[in-house]
Length: 135
Ligand code: CMX
Image 1 (spheres, helix red, strand yellow):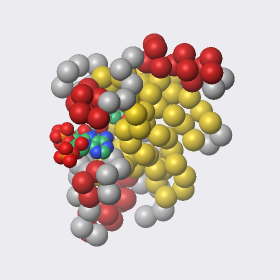
Image 2 (tube, protein in one colour):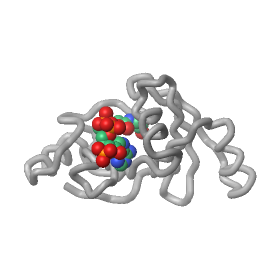
Image 3 (tube, protein in one colour):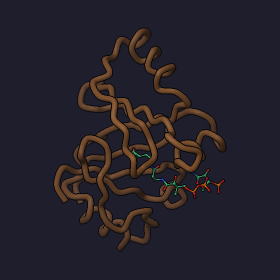
Image 4 (cartoon, protein in one colour):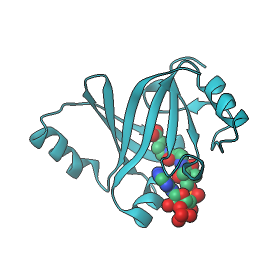
């Protein structure tokens, strides 16, 4: 498994419309994409800082993982995503090392990337995502 860089940092917010004002007007970043990921029950807004993206996440329903996160912990950093060569191979590799994965195989996330999550209880409290363009 080869982690090349931090692909994005996911940030849970109650309202993208409200939160983006801070990223745009105070930090001077440009939102280059807004996308709903139906399968994940989230709306996303993307900003780029160098090679790393910030992904604002707004729940699209009360049963969204982001709605549950905000209810329990409030707004804030939700997950850390690493770019890997292949999500399926990376998930298999950590599974073999005894790490609990949320996904056994890759699924489709924002920007058409393949994604897979590791459980925060197995990764010292950080919900961790692998992303790749291919499998
Ligand atoms: N970071 C760290 N800990 C988290 C967490 C997060 N993002 N989300 C939940 N937890 C913790 C909770 O605080 C809780 O801890 P305690 O038992 O100590 O209270 C524990 O994990 C269980 O949480 P829960 O509220 O009972 O929620 P679930 O177990 O139902 O779900 C999780 C938690 C991580 C399995 C679920 O949110 C998940 O499958 N996430 C992956 C998918 C996802 O987050 N999609 C949205 C982003 C999509 C995208 O980026 O495109």
